[in-house]
Image 1 (cartoon, rainbow, N blue to C red):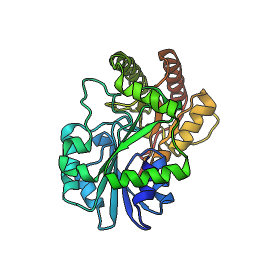
Image 2 (cartoon, rainbow, N blue to C red):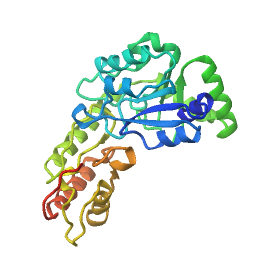
Image 3 (spheres, rainbow, N blue to C red):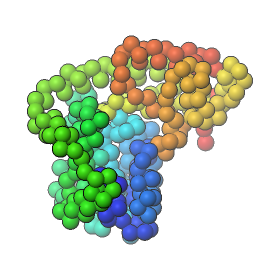
Length: 305
């Protein structure tokens, strides 16, 4: 959906503001549509969330879109109503800028967090907001390949034309299954979220107990995005120096048998992403292996510039 929107709306050289860390596909979608990705860092002290002042600085006369993903992949960070309102207040001042919101993890939030989306927070943006969602995450229907979007009529029509000529159309069986998921009994969501919250808390706690790692507690999704700055500069048992987050996740894979994704892939280092969408037994084992792997590193960490 996002790619179709870019293909339908971008002219060569149009800019798309992408908060980092970001889902890995966003920049490539923009580039394929001949746009220009503009990255704005969401810093750890702000729980990786885009700040209004930074958004304001990033907008130029060439800006066409701003992407917002809440809750986020890879960090799990989600914007509260007030945090979202600060961003929409900036966007209202720039009538040439559209907002594309990726709400795929809408129902995966914890600790009483209240999800909100830009067009809901600021109705003035309704005519220039594309709200994207799907059934893959909240309803565990990844294989059905169904997403949906709401936005300006002309844009949706143009996206449909591109979709029909690129990947054909979603099957009728998948569409019917998605309708049942969206309109059916939603009571399973709360206990399912409780299970995810327990897994989140388990992973966050065990990672924070690992030498050299620190991990924030995310508001939603099923990812954590811990910092590995405290191991940069240390040496592995076989004498290799951990220079980057890519080195660290390679060490975890080869030395501990744990697969993670380096923060470099998401546009912000030195971090790495872990998914906790699996059993508690697997998570305990994986985090124990990470703790042991960190404990075997030697030497002193160095400050990352």
